[in-house]
Image 1: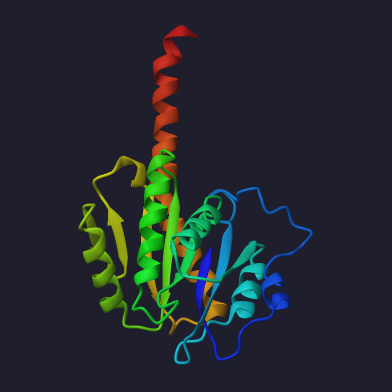
Image 2 (image 1 turned 60 degrees about the horizontal axis):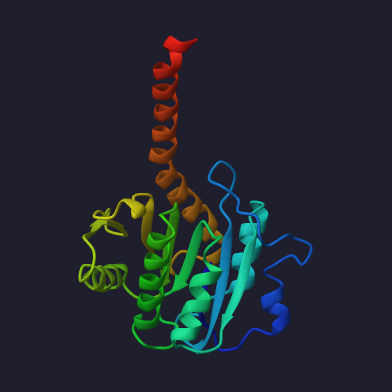
Length: 221
């Protein structure tokens, strides 16, 4: 899911719909063993300095055979936040624009907090949440981490990623901040690499668990 800042020209309904193939079934999740499912969301806010080219993003993901879905944020309130949270449930990768309504990331922070609570309540899941920003990455990740530290033991790693270390449900959960110096056409490769790194430990743990289970049952064979 991607929540993008607006450009000087608002996208038409056709532009938003172009992000999703109408013949595709929107419900199946593409798991880590294949390619992650991506959703893309658009804000109405005009941010002239940091436009977000949704068509380029969708086309770039499509070249890798990845579904990229779009959602147009029409307002910035609790109801809209909850709609966005619900729409992220089946997305392995969620992309948020940092400054959707010229509020220095406040609405994006509220969405992130809401998604965290939702994922914890559902028992946890694998998720890569990406902030796509035209601001300085260090400033954005520091502000976001300071907000999350009020509730969770969050830590910054590799200068661009946040992990939450005090909740088992978020063990395979990461927020990464990516500068808009990375063009939309290059964003899929960056995110897929990050997602692959995130799943590496999960897949290794699953393999070890299977080996352990086989060892325990061997005496009964």
